[in-house]
Length: 472
Image (cartoon, rainbow, N blue to C red; front, side, top):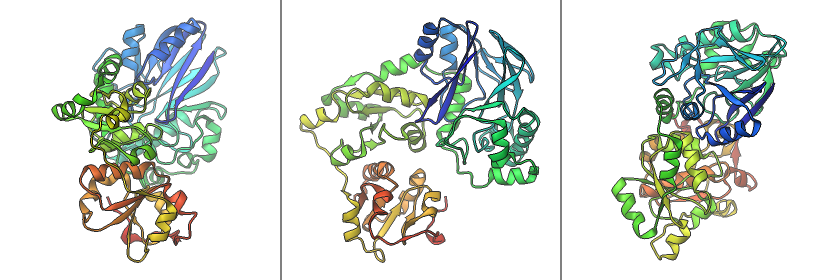
């Protein structure tokens, strides 16, 4: 028996590849299936099952394509009403894989079909659980995503999750390994560890939600406290995972269409496409195609695309660095953005060489910012998360998280200059591009963000000025 965690950092997502005696199972696969097919062929094993812990909200799984390509059935837990062929297993049902057994533990609460898969080794010993979004390392799944589908409140779902954890998971031996679907950075929980593997015993000792003396009422209060609104694309991804979707190969073929500079503007206008520039913040700031939005590929790319663009059906034309076209299309498809018209042939360099109009962002260094800002008079917008702001911030700065830019942008006075920063410059350049696309040019974006600013003598505070925290 072999177990491999295939972790994708930009999504904070773990898929699992299990083999035993010539047979394989894959749990929660990513959208692109070729790497799995290559691995199966290389190992000389047959894919027997594709297990899905639930209908994922934060990414589009590869279950449908993988099943078509291999003939392996898709297995969900109870309550899974798929709109394609799948096995909706019963609680306690067992599936043989070579010399090992995978047992279904129905663990609703995050969603009503949420299921944990228990791996029992060839000696009949409980070896590991694949807990999906039910149990994370240091956290548990948020109970607010399935309210509409379940016809319940988040408190009711949290109560169900409480019993799932205590009746199905905490009863397992302390040495059982825990393999979750996500780690730190995922929006499916709020307090996940950077660690991606643990044990039941370790989680009983260290996970706030698994305290032995915790009451159901305490659990509900602590699990639901501080939950941020889910990104808008989550519900669309759930629908795709439940109903099926366009073949990844088709999406990739469309996205790899090269559009030359003379056709680019016309194609964008005719299709209503958003121009998405995935170059670095530093490159983008110097020059870019007017009206384009910058979300750098070397960052939390896919989650920010989903959060800020939201509508997965939005047509997109890409501008990437040379050679990154396929990687960009792949990452977009993972979160359901399948309407990719193509990419600018030759990238931004081709646009610039052709002599077309370009735009730029007024980016200043932290030192320039420190020298020219007047803390008492000038407006400073901090677009980090509220928790980052609360830990430490520039005195008198306003907290306006990037995730809520569509809410607070309407309050900007176009005649008042302001400074814009995040933690390191990635998010502030996203915000700068959105602001300029909407006609705002009355700001300076600070290179290096708070990380660079904190090294200057700018006055900083470690408490929250409640009147300046955005309430959204």
